[in-house]
Image (cartoon, rainbow, N blue to C red; front, side, top):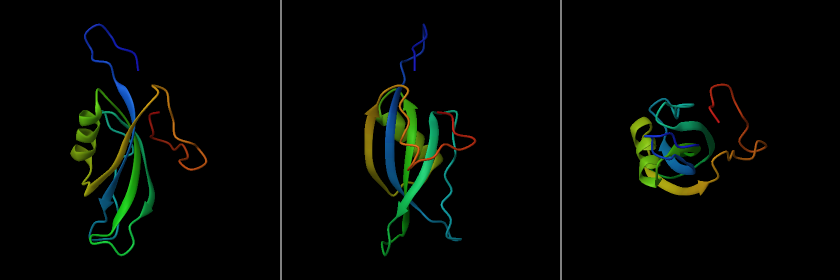
Length: 106
């Protein structure tokens, strides 16, 4: 991401958290948001945990780590953060594990 005259520089983060299943056994995560969530994938689940959760990974563009977590907390219901890693501005996760999809804004 490139900075414009009065806009803060945005950084790309690879973020993961545990997201609880709803009453119907579904995890609802946005595909992308104007706040900087570029793409998200369910990569696994916690079996036997209380609550049982999906493992979610996402690419988020934000000014800093706190702002990246704020995007997650605004649009999702994380029960626990797993990790956050700063990546290069044009970084994308490996397509064989996290395939591109319509609606992602990478």
